[in-house]
Amino acid sequence: MDKIELSENKIVPGALTVWNEHGVADLTMDLKALSFRPESIQEIYSFHILDHLFPEETEIALKNWFKCLKNGGKVFVVVDDFEYIARGFVGGDLSIELVNHVHNHPTQFTQDNLTKILQAAGFRDVVVWYGGLPDIYNKKHYELVLAAIK
Image 1 (tube, helix red, strand yellow):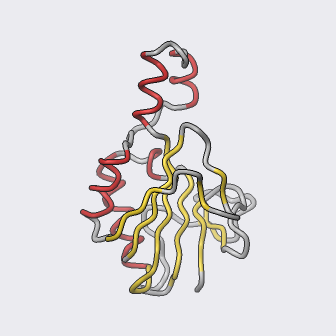
Image 2: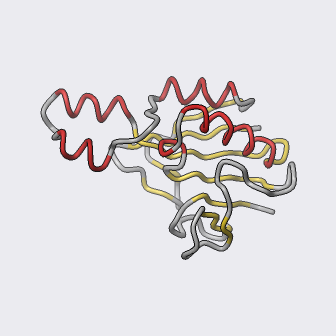
């Protein structure tokens, strides 16, 4: 399989969309425990999945995704940037209502801690995409976009 996206919306051209509820997704499954054959996927695109998991679930999910990827395969992760959000709140640019309504997640990420979490799951060569993923996804100002290789 070439590529999958973990998202409730179709974003990545040509990717199989996987989500945890029925809807627009091509497949429905537990996003923490993808049931694909080991080493069967070249690319996994994750859109705001990890920040909606608890820390221990994040570790489980990443190890599962690592197992599903082919050697040399890539994972692309989009999550909220906690450092940006915290600075916006402290600086008065983001209200507590907005933070609670839009950015209130069980797990928060910074560039450094997400890099370490990806590496702990076995990924290497972590790269930050400051402008998003060319021709695929335009990063929002409050997001982190990282890629890593199995």
